[in-house]
Image (cartoon, rainbow, N blue to C red; front, side, top):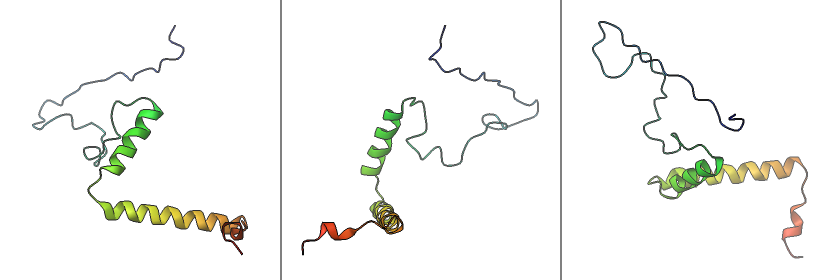
Length: 93
C-alpha cells in the first residue's frame, strides 16, 4: 500500500512558445544549490548528516570553519551562563 513511502510531486514541463533560453523559466531553484553537496537525492537523515560532515572536513575555507566553531562555543557558554551552570566543577581547587 505504500504506507511508509513518500509521494513524489508530479512534474509539469511547460515551455512558453517564444522563450529562447535554457531550462524552464518557471523553475524554482535556490541560487546556492549548485555549490552545496547536501542538496540532492539524499533521503535519509544519516546520509544528509554524513554529507554535511564530509563537506565541513573537506572545505577549503578553514577560516569559515574556525569562525563557526568559535560561534558555537560562545553560544554554549552563554547557554551555560543563562541556566546558571557551575563551571567550578571543571577546575581543581
